[in-house]
Image (cartoon, rainbow, N blue to C red; front, side, top):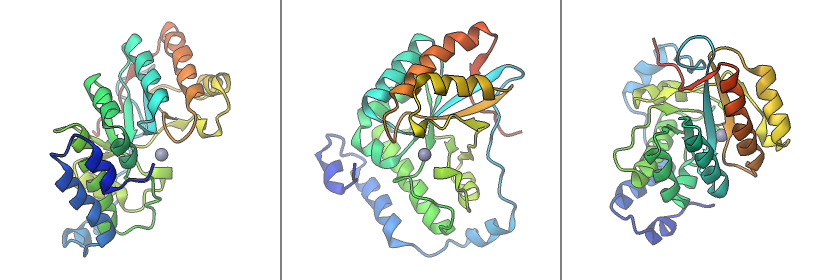
Length: 243
Ligand SMILES: [Zn+2]
C-alpha cells in the first residue's frame, strides 16, 4: 500500500509520528552529502554476510518484503510450532501498514532486518539518499517496535551500490544469501521445497519471501521442510556474525 502521513496519523501509535515524518521527509529532501561519506568511499565495501552461524548442517531462514498479512501470520505460526527463529527483512511501507504484525515478529524472538522503505533499487543512489532511506525504514520499524534491534540491512534486488557501507555506518551488517528459492515465481510449495533440497549446502542462508505476492506456497514449503530437514540432521540458526 502507499505510505502517507495520513495513514500513520490514523494509527493510535502517534508517539513516533514526528520522528517518522521527519525521516520520510529526508527521503525526498535529498540532503547534502555528509562529510564522512567521502572517507567511507575510500574503504572497500563490506562483503554481505552469506553464510549461517554454526558449523556443518546449519541453515538460516530469511524472509523478505513483509510483513504481509495472512502469509506472515501463518509463517509465524509455523515457526513458533517448530521453535525456529528466522530473519525478517522488513519493508518500511509494509511496516506502516501493519505495525501490529511487526510487533508480533519481534515479540516471538525473530531477528529484524531493514529492507528499505519502498523496495527501491538503491544501486545507483548516493550515500546520502541511501542513508535517508535506511534511517526512515528504521524509524518506521521503531515506530512499531520502540527500541527494536535491527542488526541487518538487505538491499532490494541485491542491488548494493554504496548501501553496504552506509548500512555498516548505521550499525547494520549487510545481509546477503547463499541461494534464493525464486518464490516470486509462485511456483507452488512442492517446487519451492525441491529447490531447497537441491541447493542446500552447509551453512546456507536461504532467501525467501513472506511479502510481495501470494506467499502461501512459501509458507507451505517451510512447513514441510523444517521437520524434514531436522530429521536429516540440519539445525536452524541465524546468519553468521562478522569475524
Ligand atoms: Zn525484497
